[in-house]
Image (cartoon, rainbow, N blue to C red; front, side, top):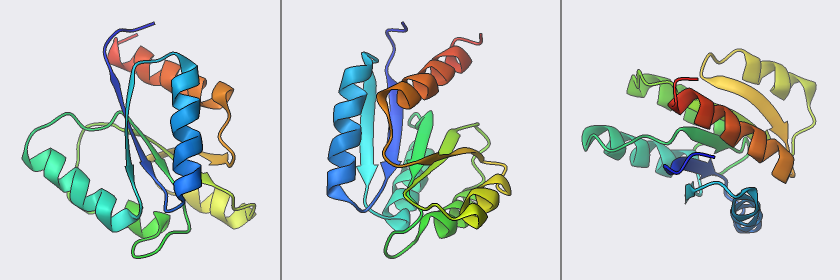
Length: 138
């Protein structure tokens, strides 16, 4: 397991869900810095600030679909306008069971997949393992 920290951004308006993800992160055993934002607009503002200050971008972003201000889809549109060249592993994390949401997620080149809530320890461990492999250049 890698000792450098993995930066995870969770975009979800549900405090309980954020708390659960935080607990799951702790159980994976990975060194993770988890940042949470409660809607897409706050997340876009945060990422724009990260880019302008040349800080490290999150390597993994989990996005809820249904949120106030900017929902998950609107976040993706705004994210693409930021022009971030660095590849970030982004996954839609939603309680939506609509097939069209899953299909819509596939239309975004920035989205690597669709995860149904609740997030499991096993699934998050898989994602962190992928991030780790990419950071070490395989």
